Length: 359
Ligand code: GTQ
Image (cartoon, rainbow, N blue to C red):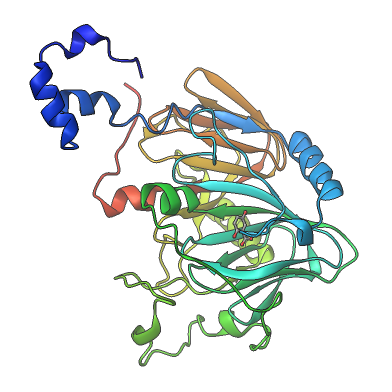
């Protein structure tokens, strides 16, 4: 923001200005210059897996989780944007987390919603959420809904890595809800549920009576049905994508696309603040733009996504960002699968979502 020159301020008398300043008041025409500028320009951007891998390997060598300062206590490399230095965007936070053999990322809970998309996993790498151990197999997507206890326990002999997706910037900066964090008294929360418990309760036959009462865990109130802890196994998602590609027409913008639904409602969005798609691309998509932000994680394949004037060339495990209002389309080299991440539900909650084709 350009500094105001003294001449610009002359329209107010010295008396008026001091009355305003003494009373914590500002004239709108000056406030107006600052509004909308806390977040800088969010540019199209890409983080190549090779670089991410170097970074996560290096910090793994340098710092054991046990030595991390109090706070989240997670060993994570966080992609940041030129316009917003704490995350990829002002709504969506992505991170690449590692847990070495024998380590535990200690149990805590928070108001932010989180999910894990497994990059390097195995049966003995477990995210424990709300009393159940969820094994993290490659490309599994596991929810850690708001205010549920969670810890990440690596009982295997391999380092595990995954993509964290949280609505942290929205919660901590925009909503300024900074006091919604709590550490568990134990490093590992007790495992109180048998394997498969959470999934089993959200099947085609499910408990229905009296569920509303404790729909929203913790101190929050809301009119949305809370997302349960849940593991979307990649083998199921992959099969559904394959069936879709064999039998259906692709979406013009998203290819063969599946939305991860909130298991409690059977509908997207997965979280009130963020929605997720598995997208199988076989051909170039049509350009469009929207005011929601999209981040992508490349599950498989190579290609390029054109965003405004930029061409983001991607391969397996790269992360890239499509900022608001930028015209974009995807061009897979051959077949590719993307995880699409969007803050669209926030815009929709305010009747504020807009999408159009370039003229
Ligand atoms: O694993 O609980 O990347 O609390 C940032 C904050 C991961 C987690 C992050 C967190 C976590």
